[in-house]
Length: 427
Ligand SMILES: [Zn+2]
Image 1: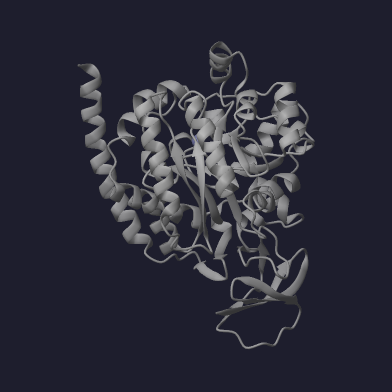
Image 2: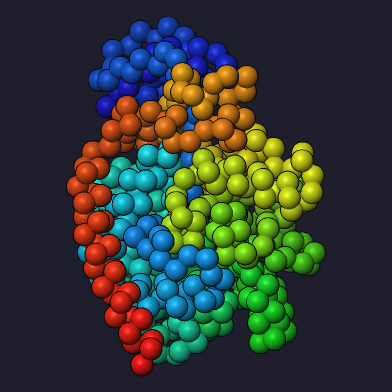
């Protein structure tokens, strides 16, 4: 499959771009090579697509359930009772809804932490996006649950990957307040042996850190280091409540951090130390977290919030510069998962978005990256390509209506489940 994009704006220059297979093979003006598909790029610009490094895709069907509560009340009262009742087919429909929203908003990769991973894998395979799909370790300090999780991990990694070009299997540990020391240590060893990415919620709330000190006498970051979970293939989500010592540890291990400003502000978890960590050896990336705590998966919106949160956190208007924010949402996110992507250059993976320069949000056009970070919404994005395939053309995505219909049907079931769960809680 070859695609030729004619007369497109790239870094303020008009050029042609030839995509051969899954990479950008030639970028120069006036390319005259026959292609399977030719796209007229006039009055459009090409940009890297977005890489969402922390989410729970299937939570797309839980958005709007139990808003306006702190993290632990929200999890215990609204989320966990419903999640435990969802079937594998529900997860499939919910993940497809999430992927639809991601493509509409220019995202081509997500790092997922959820259950029934085979269903997420199926949805990712079918819809053409990329993902790191992880088995989530979560035992609530119960030995039998830990034993089962280890078995599930072995089983998951022994199953063939139906889509190795776009899917990387990884492993995640939910958090220090839900995973036992034994399961953390086992996971570290398992990940090392199998060269897996590790994805963990860490130091999200002050309570998490306080409880960790009360239980272990150390911070979550110190414990993760002690249990051998930190390294360049580790992605820590949130990482808000960090001491100087924690930052020094993260620096030493060159971990990737996934900041999630919308979720952190909505749940009042706190503000990420953006500027300080930008200058560290950590690789900063951006995630939306799940739709239940956001309540969408738009990396455009997340970028703006990330910049504004960085400014308020440091009380410095020069913090969270648009260019830095754009880079963490694109190139850094791809690099966190070892992808040569998130950049428009020859030999890089052909992932990109095309934006409409005549869209009201991109007018006037003094600075395109500033407009994308601070002014745009998803209506600016006309086309999305991933791995050299067109996922959205002129804002149309295959099966969109059917995906929405299925999700609407599922929301009816969830409404019933919520009613039942509330009755159970009253008893
Ligand atoms: Zn999360």
